[in-house]
Image (cartoon, rainbow, N blue to C red; front, side):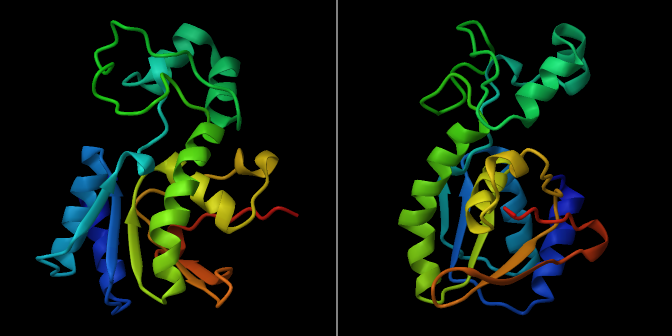
Length: 201
């Protein structure tokens, strides 16, 4: 999200009047910077931030840093749609000459959404879910695909349905859990920009 989106997100979160017990974000600058802006709006000056590559955006391999139009021109619209929207198909692997080769700290040279799911979920189970079980308030600032991966689990969204689901940038999603750590209720804080959560039905 951009700076103005992050500031607006922070203002929406502030209106909830929630005291957060833990903050999580990825190692990527755009997420870290967004969280910093949100924390300033919340007037949280000494927040302990948990940063991890496990919450990084999906690794798009050799497509990294290219815009959508460039990719479509090179590979065609249908192929790009398959790479972007499928659950278990990886984009072309990042080659050794790619300028981002040594900047992406992940074990894979490209990732499908399934790969992203398989690194996000263990981290959530180990680090975040125990806090929720203790009724702690947690704020996570991360990316479209790592967020989709987590929501896939929390809302029991199927592999077929998740490819249809878009995450609105800069629109905080408030989720309340019951005592069994199941989603009790939820809402996007900016109702005008909310996206429908697709359930596995």
